[in-house]
Image (tube, rainbow, N blue to C red; front, side, top):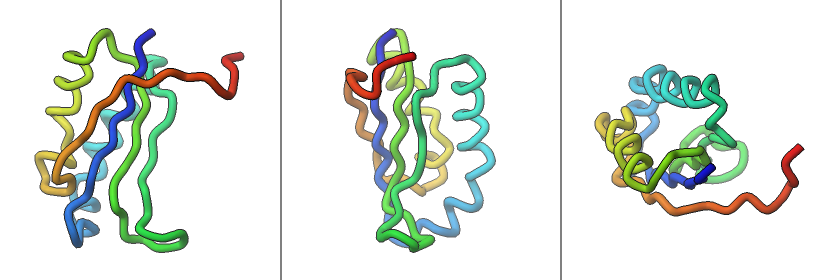
Length: 99
């Protein structure tokens, strides 16, 4: 298993674009989850309790950094103008311990 963290960075005023592309974004995450490859995924609100977002974090299993990059390159939020860019880094799961 090779885990990678994806950090999507929203552009300013991304709320409407997020709504427009959310179904496609979630479908890709649901496919990773169904395949047993998704560790965690969720948005980063600008502040707690606020509906506006500053980005998202996904941690998932991919065969290589190239496979992770190829997956990120097809992100609907990236193509739809929600994200300005996506950072991808290797990730090591330490805690909580796997069950």
